[in-house]
Length: 369
Ligand SMILES: NC(=O)c1ccc[n+]([C@@H]2O[C@H](COP(=O)([O-])OP(=O)(O)OC[C@H]3O[C@@H](n4cnc5c(N)ncnc54)[C@H](O)[C@@H]3O)[C@@H](O)[C@H]2O)c1
Image: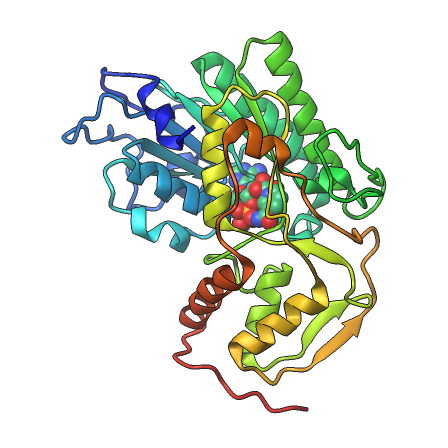
């Protein structure tokens, strides 16, 4: 199935006015460049266009998803509290008449005028450093925020997709991890606010699907990287690339032999769109099954950047999973989806992005301390 197939499904010929009506104080939070009370511009009216809400739209994955959806002809509202996302991620869309940005928190009640056809719930800090900074808010985001978006989906008759995570498998005892694996998660550890929050969100999505007539989709996303990751959010790919480019020590935890699978963001966006378009209500793993140790990743980044940064080793954080490798049979069979971008190619694009972001035009020669 081609992802474009979905765009023929629904027609909404009437004008759409997605005006936020009830979140207190919202308008004063909104960047003057985005006028929420304006209608979308229908001068290029496309009867197949949908109105799509992307919660977490200013984040790393969300901003790529918004761009892709706008490019395909849809009207997109990005909603984000800018906790870990950045306005600059949406710079390309800022003046696009098919795009609106709303600064709001999904934990607060949400109300919109006008129809919404699809909702992607990507709102949640994904970096362990950042989601552990305010664990109660992280858990609220996963549970209360998901409930608010599910209520909105029910009210609008919208299909809604949850960006869940491979963290629902915890520190897995089997590899690769299929969707049927129920996980090995600590309910009271530092990662629990996120891992258990996402598990609870999956339950809410499942029950709204079963009992409230809402069309729900659940993506279990494995480690994803690419341009627009925040240089300082503590995720392994951005950490290593920034450290290598700036000549800082590359920090590895434990013996560096724990494994991860790294998926490029464009592949993930394709998978999310295909899942939304599908009739699959069970959770679906989206990730790249290529498996690398953390040391291997560091070595590749060092080689690609020409950096002379040295590797240093720190203690392994509590509950850090020892291995991660998705079984993507379901995505392949049900969505006809396979990741296309190998780690080497994706890292080249990511390194180039960070060079630009750090204002570097060539690789610095790092001093070995
Ligand atoms: N990138 C990955 O490797 C990965 C892996 C597994 C799951 N995911 C999931 O995918 C989604 C997107 O991840 P990302 O990598 O883009 O992370 P990100 O931190 O870059 O983006 C998350 C966005 O959500 C916003 N946000 C957080 N809490 C919010 C709230 N209460 N209300 C409104 N907005 C809120 C943030 O400001 C940010 O813009 C997340 O839900 C994450 O759990 C990502």
